[in-house]
Amino acid sequence: MKSILFLLFLPFASLLAQEDFSLRNVAGGHFSISLRKSGGASIDNPPIDIYYGSPNRILDMQPYLAWKIKRNTLFGLRLGYQSVFTLYEAQDIGVNLKTYDRTYSVGVFTRHFLTPEKAFRFFLEPSLGAHLTVNSRREDDDDREAVYHVRQASLKVSPGVTYQLSQHFGLLAKFGQFGLRTGKLVYEYDADVWFREFFADASLAAFALGVEYRW
Image: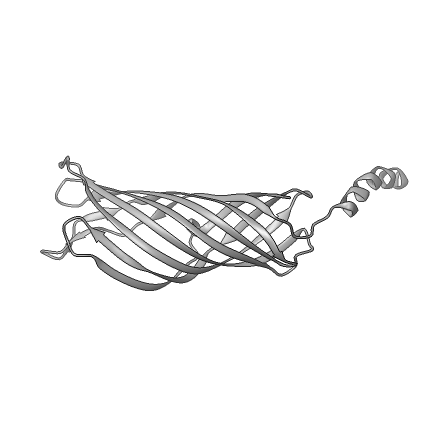
């Protein structure tokens, strides 16, 4: 019986031995869909919280192309789109507040693999990006929509893993991000506000799954 199983396994073992898992150019994309608890909203005068935050509904998509530049390194270009919807439930005033954030991004990255010849490999991905966020908010009793923009640049690092299913197809997972972002808030009626901050995000919204094609 053992000899029969061994003979049946031989063709699959031969195929696995012939697979080439060396680093190649890739085309792919990663996405995430999640719910994340938001904080409350408030007004400044008087300074009181008037809304309870409900979970954010987040959709994030990032297609990319990357080229092999070293034995263990890729250089790539990436586009991004993220949509965030939040409903704030009123505490006392009986009016709900809805906010929408839509972020458009473009960036470059390098991906450095620790085990570039293996099917399962860890990587670190530094990236530089430019982002435009359009925020709109509306209360239930108001037909008008308040809009402001956030223009920012980011420098960040994301850890992750890839797993090669075959010579051409693989899976990707990224686990959070940390770095620096700077930019300004552009209001419709108020003065612009500049900001700079360090950030680290290991939440579910920063976890992403993707698919890659190698050539």
